Length: 141
Image (cartoon, rainbow, N blue to C red; front, side, top):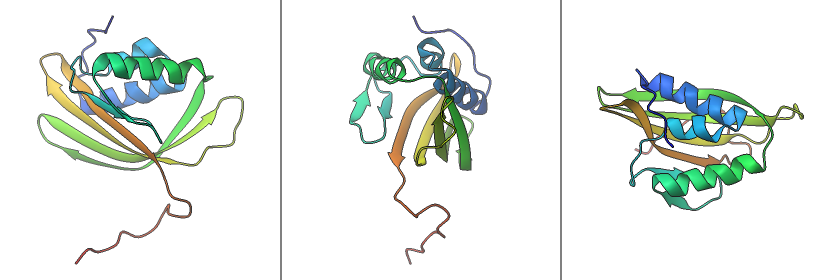
């Protein structure tokens, strides 16, 4: 059953999201998501998942195969309006049992403010191409 926890800011939701990921806690993970059939999640190399129930099932599969994780975030940027926030960052993930970090993942998280406070409506994570971290952005014009 989804939590009725109120998140006062999008930053509170993002912190709760990554804490749930580190602890492989399905209830805490789903407490951050909007209870909406339009929410979207893309895991690295995975298909586009749409809907609260489908996303919950996918996170359950991820957590069944994982131990507690250590997640380090870097290169975060945020665009915030009164009713939405888009956060982009790099996720560096390692198992607690293994200090070696996996290759970073580029993530985009989208949060919206509704009657129950802030909630996640989209998480898209993709592998970062080798040797691309720290590259200067390219000008398109």
